[in-house]
Length: 436
Image (tube, rainbow, N blue to C red; front, top):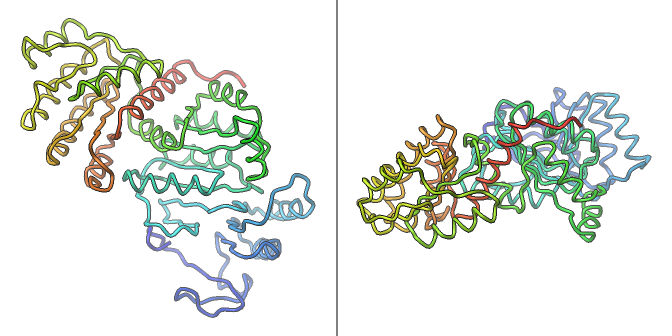
């Protein structure tokens, strides 16, 4: 925990040890010098009930149970007894069969993951799958994307996905919430949590799995939760203003846009690219996402002709390949960007930067950062695509992008998917929620 800024006290408990990781080890919970706020239980399944009971009697109010062998079974007398005892004494339980939780404001690292610590930011991740939880954390580190919190809910003996959504909806550190959902155990509680997130203006992104019969059966085996009809969930998401992620990558990239970008007034997209082929690819992807691409206004065309020359083909998508070399690209990007931002036929923009010397990337990013200030003031998202960078070799660039709160995408498809997510959420906010 200390690596992420935790300043509290840690008490290992193990009757067979006197020291663990340089810390004094205690024989039992009752022998601790004070009542801890959180107990992390990492023991074989046979001892979990006793350990929880000891923590409850000692006055501990929260616990995380990593133990994987325990399975949630509706009506189980043993688990019902544990839950009743916990509830009567004010304890909440995360897990079992989970990887724990992280909350960076307090430096809390209640997980057995030993990866480098994530950056502190504004996105909360909640997942019923530990493996998916590890994926989003790795991708966050790789993209230099800061998180506010992270929870692996596991088998949800007590606390459910809905409880965590409610917490992060109220959390001042969190601007967007991203969820991997196999099944909502309590449908009404999930609806209430989603409505709260919407009311608090915390965009909620959900990747719902279990569309096929085989997948639903796997979800039951994995978490013990019975997955309902996929189409019912999809209808519910639309009513609740939930943004649907279609794959693991979108689970990371959609909330990044929703946390940082302004919401557009409509679904018309302007495209500026330094590659003709990628400009066409963007146009195809915009059509596939159900967004619109229209020609620029006459006034915008006149301004662009002055910048690019009388022989330039001033259309949307706009290809500036023939007009820009390494020395000119940044100035042209910024000049053209300023011209198209005011175009009333465009509600948002995809700007593509392809292969250039490395210093050009940084100059282009700063130019986009300046444009982004204008874009925010007029509620027009800018979605930059840098097609020739990699997180490993351009981590400094991604760090700077995070400082500017400017999401960078590595190919056009996720950028356009984020444009669709921004439009969907913007539409939901304009329409409001159905009465559920």
